[in-house]
Amino acid sequence: MSKSKPLLKSPDVTLIGGGIMSATLGIILKSLKPELTIQIIEALGDVAQESSHAWNNAGTGHAALCELNYTPEREDGSVDITKAAGIFESFEQSKQFWTYLIEQKVIGDPQDFIRRVPHMSFVFGENNVNFLANRFEAMKGHHFFADMEYTTDHAVIDKWAPLITQGRSKEEAIALTRVGNGTDIDFGALTAKLMASLSAMEGVQLNVKTDVRRLRKLDSGKWFVKARREGESRSDRIESGFVFIGAGGGSLHLLQESGIPEGKGFGGFPVSGQFLVCKNQSIVDEHQAKVYGRAAVGAPPMSVPHLDTRVINGKVSLLFGPYAGFSPKFLKSGSTLDLLKSVSWDNIVPMLSVGRDNMNLTEYLYQEVMNTQNDRCDILREFYPDAKNEDWELVTAGQRVQIIKKDPKCGGKLQFGTEVVAAKDGSLAALLGASPGASTSVSIILEVLEQCFGEEMEKESWKQKLRDLVPSYGHSLAEDAERFETLRMRSRNALELGDPIAAPQ
Image (cartoon, rainbow, N blue to C red; front, side, top):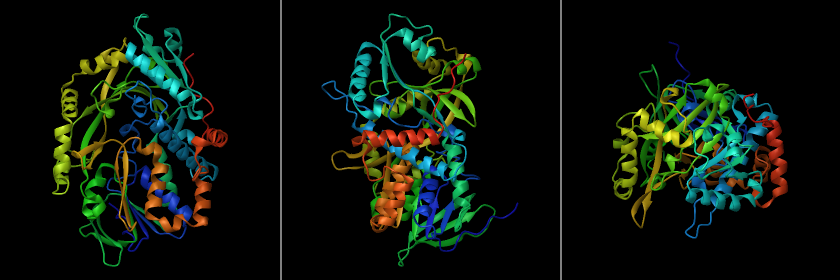
């Protein structure tokens, strides 16, 4: 076995984790300051093998077009679209960045990682139909969602998503919204492209099969990073001016290892995901959409069901889920001791508080673990009544570590989403959490830059370059419909999103 190169001794930047976040931050930093030296450290044998891998995440370009948990219902029955508009704008920033990279030939064919797939929301039952109607009314007046269509007509739904109406009574109250310009993204393929381009730049080195063993702050202000390459008996020791921890579920342990005060009190709750994958190609060909439903009352946001067209390595697949499972691992390739090792004196109260206050989550996970194939297919049949057990097989997706953090009112709370935790002096940042992470990677990385490179971000040269990379940076698209449409058309052309996946003839 050939040995890998030793790590850079004194890199300006160290990126821990070979996923979409590290790749995005690395390319943006090299664009802003080309002379930076960057060391990338990945524990597995290749990049994008955990959270960024196509089979380990939902693959939806999360733009809040179909995800009903981003549009909560108020007590008076009205629908709040604030979070949906924010996520939508963040995804537009990601598309702008990918557009720039395509136009500059930094990455190649966009069809390798992004396709146009309609996004739909589907509900059944009168109360849910009323909710979807109110949601549609709240969203259609915003220019972000002007393309949205709504129907309760079984015949129209049959044209948009025929599996949903097959075997369903025409008397049942159902409703569907549709946005034709949604996307499906293979984040594994995208990350591989970004990392290939980044690691080919001068001053950048990628080391895979390399495990970070220690992380601590030096008196000099730099970070001491101790890491061991596979096959080596001794560890490499490096000193880095800035460290970014983008290691998915592995980020919490490394944040705790860093000892920064800002990381105190954080805990993690791991949840594994499973999906049913259709084995019958004729059924796959019949459904060309991402159809998201509404989670059952009392169920956590992670349980939002969806019947999902995916394009992975150029092959169209059909998935339904997610079904949750419990594993104490923080990574799919992690250790069964991960959860236990994450418990410390500073986070034990928040973790116990979350356990006390989230018994519904415990019950939900227990039921999910106990479900049989027929139980899972019964849930699928709420979406697709004619589904047959033998046409579907269960696959295990990635691990997600939901954030647990201190709360002065209840001791601790479980938080869904992605959070940036940064040292006060800006020398280290870590990402915790999950969805809609990958889809909003650019806005998240911009937040990292603002927290950790504050002085540089005030420079006009950095601001101008960021406007090149992300043209809407510093400008609200929610308040500028004309600029939004101009940038959306630019992205649509560069990313070749003109036509949805062809429907079967």
